[in-house]
Image (tube, rainbow, N blue to C red; front, side, top):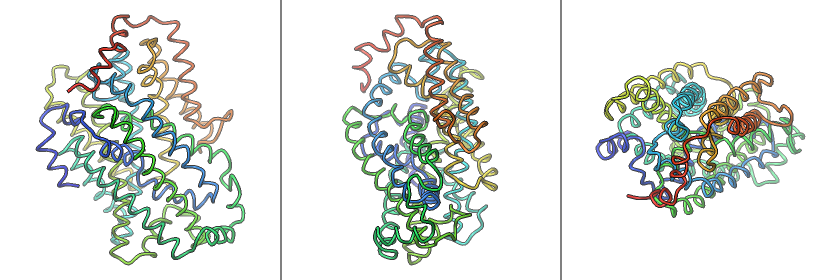
Length: 477
């Protein structure tokens, strides 16, 4: 990973556009694995497995929405995002929102929300990789946190966006190998579906029922949030700015669906394998199920490779989240508000300093992390997604957005989601909706109402953004 970072430093980081977008030239394989491995992280191996261990066979239903909706979203939205970002010459989500709605306030809100809530999101990710590394080498958890964080931070600072992409390809392939290896070993050691079901039932018969011990709300919460929030998460939305052409979207959607299915359903099956094999031994420490299975099922060398796949999963998400957070400050706060005449090199330096500073905060917090990774990650990216999803897609596909409508929708999505979590700290339902859905619905309502009551943007600007010329220039050299 460090070697890739140094290689990309020489080839792609000569200017800000290369550092943040790689020249907008991602092909289908690189785009699919960059998107997928940034979307999935150590929480998939550690958190999903632990959740399925605790919740039972009903959670085999959970990946369906993700496997279908994420690739479908690429087909529906990627071209529009590419067109708008090129026309506006935007390299980050806050910059895109700011230019699309001609509002520095909107860009500033987006940057602040990203920086604040990406930190707890990264804490959960670092925890997953560090737990695996600590168990593999028999080192302390604190040392493992520093190692996982430092490597990802260094190669990203040196190599920029393309270092993120190339390392994500390697890490994505490692993730697929690791998940399939444990799945095959589990079937060989524990047995097929009948043996797994029997073992799960022996631990708790309720685990065979739908929705299982965690209830309908949690089952629906996980499936809905994980399927919809990616279209409001800047580290994923920004990758659409960098696709090479339309063909990339079509091919990558197929690749992404296959890759997601293998890893997500694998994690759910493995969680139930763990319950059949260990019984209730890990009921108070579900995040230890996957690493324990690896270390018990495999010889040292093979087990090490599989655990490294979990560490790779951590890094593949850390780099995307970290670059998004750093650029939100460097491009969208420093250059827009603090030093408008800053050169590209100065913006890159400030972005790197911010990425390093954020990682320090994450490392300190990760020394005393939350217990269940999945719930913690869900909270963080629910707030971010509910804040950004309406202005991003409303601005891309509808001409009617206004400055006031954008700012109001962002505030409604952010505080609406936080309110839901305040009333229901575990993220449970209110009025039949999980927090992200509730925040997004409130954001849509506010966006529509305020747009009708506020001053529209200049007609010439809006017509140009949606013009035939903008379509034709979307993939221009």
